[in-house]
Length: 384
Image 1: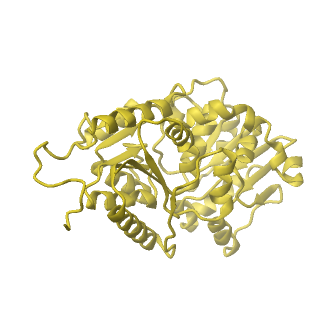
Image 2 (image 1 turned 90 degrees about the vertical axis):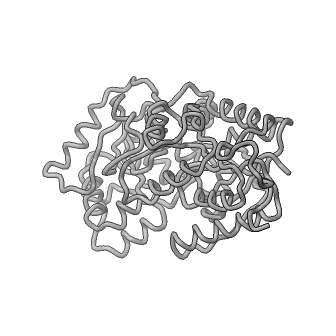
């Protein structure tokens, strides 16, 4: 039996967990397998991030049926269930709020304790599949790593035991602190056209959330916002689904908006550092911008990261409503005063998480759902 199965599946997972994986790889107290769910599969959505951040490669890689959410989730559960049939672990570790974390159901079906990194975050927007997923895994979990005390309070308010939740700070702070010089010197990864655009004042944009791009009115309002930025260039690394929806719509972007395919982490962070501000619906990008003292427009109805508003690092743009004076959002973000304090932690979150995982594994105390005299052999599936 190995100690841990670390299950990841999307680009931000690789980034946020990169130091955790390296710390685990460089210690000799516990053994782990790194499992890739297969949710992201193209090179510029996965492999490039392993290479750029020098992350250990997965021990196991699965493929999933990507027809829709249900097939991704069901094949992830099936793949992990079958894997857990043949490989024993003291605990299975998941990160975030994507389809991949629903693989925690397979761990629960095998009675393997579940660990959730990034627990108890809530947007309270039930339209989001992520909100459903993180609620489910938190209530399955035997150990939750919540980034902030305010997140822990949200979990406690849902009836999750205080003994389950440990506040750690946000590992993305660790990644940025350790790689800042690398980000600043990563211009060589950009093609000449984007590099030229980045030499002048520019705005960086990302947009991928389905509640934005699949809702025509919301997407139209976002396009209107971007088209209102007419005094500087805009660099827009656009996901393939967003490109597809835009190309099949009657909407268009102004000529000062340069659409490019998704790019690697180092070149993206280089652009983020140099940008005047970022307009995004990505929770991770909002965190990164806040930590780097880059103003942001958060193009979302709600957020699980209200701290960026509290420290006045971000302006809200609600795509669900029509804005009478849309340029007002751009005026507000342009007036944000840099120098706010990063609210996400001190940069030692990865060490806190790894040390706790080692302690729990060595003491064999992951499980919280069962009394010590539980009458089953909990290392085996219930079907036996």
